[in-house]
Image 1 (cartoon, rainbow, N blue to C red):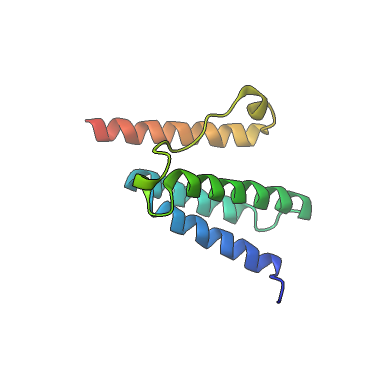
Image 2 (tube, rainbow, N blue to C red):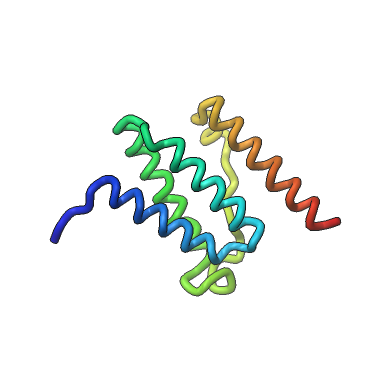
Length: 117
């Protein structure tokens, strides 16, 4: 049994996330794919410590999405996508991360408003 290199693990996780996004509603799939692509690009040159945290958090994200979607898509999962962040979790974010989260919220709300019109 051969162990995977770090690059192989990153690629596998990246591809897995995009496969999982296929089970999301179209507007969330587009938003999720764009955000995922940007985050993976931003972390290409990160330190080993940052890479460990990055991989752990994105693996947890993939597990959460898989559980919420279910094995056969949205109709077999929990029906609720996402999870709320509590105040303690938000306090751990850096300013840059809070800004990204805010931009994501604004984008998601504007797309929702556009669809309602």
